[in-house]
Length: 123
Image (tube, rainbow, N blue to C red):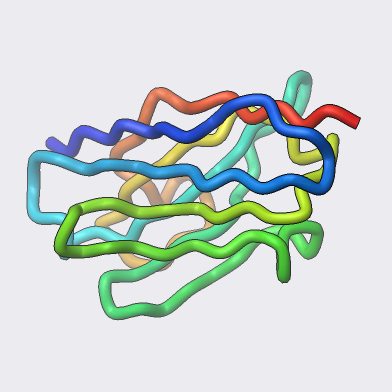
């Protein structure tokens, strides 16, 4: 089992920044690629970004490329999502997830999920 706990969400004005954190515990962190997903009200959950143990990265929608950066601190068993130039359409619950199959971009590729953290961007 892997337990994931997200933090860092909140209310921010458009153009602002937030950094989300996801602390992992349980099985060996290095065995998992880590990803971020988000779900806006009335919409399906979508892939945001993922990072492998070795440093490979993947990003989802074009709307986040260049604004969001995923990173991980393997010594701290933590993955981060730095979000800059936030827009109201970034408002969503953000979920951290762990994948044993590698740099997955689909929900089905993830084995463990956090409880989510709310990000609200006001205009």
